Image (cartoon, rainbow, N blue to C red; front, side, top):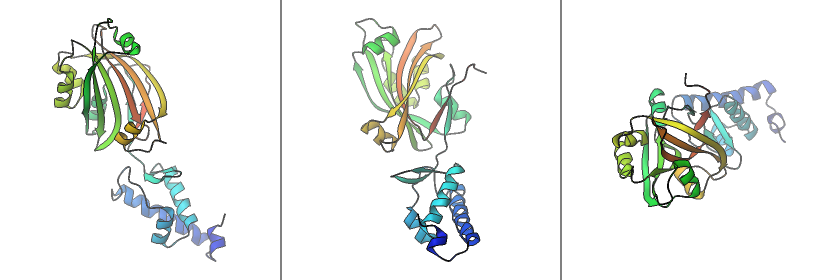
Length: 250
């Protein structure tokens, strides 16, 4: 690999000054919001031309910015301004909209589509349904600060939750939609967390490459009488959300 010293007669002290200059310039653009979270940076070649330095100088600057948590580097895709990650505590009673409110973040849940379907065995078991019961599936996309961060398929038992899709659409939140239908309190009974590759549809909805993994969370939520009220399959963008498992509700 050709280093800056090999590429030009610039002394090492001067070379270090160059990558520091590039680092500080990009960092300033990020902190002053001239570059927004998720923005793709110019290529190494473009940055090298802009700063009139060698590509190795740019590469070193980007590595330092990544170490500082300001930039993420996706090999084969480029470098991006690091998003503001949301810490999502997996406690029994804190809903995602409530978490966002506490973080002073603006979020909403948009209804993509809904349908009445015959449940799978997994859904029947999770919701403790009879063989004759149907469910209302509501597909959602959660957007925070204008950035899509998760897509969800949520299943509600019928006939109890007729109209839940309209209630969610009008209130832009599952908890508020449930309250409109008479459920004032709910408890997260179980969550199963895995990782995997996003489907083409989910990757498009999350505005991310398929090569980037998603966190998949399957939740069973009950009302205050321990009766299951929904089963959800949530696919979260790993670049936006970190899951925090808490062992009590302090």
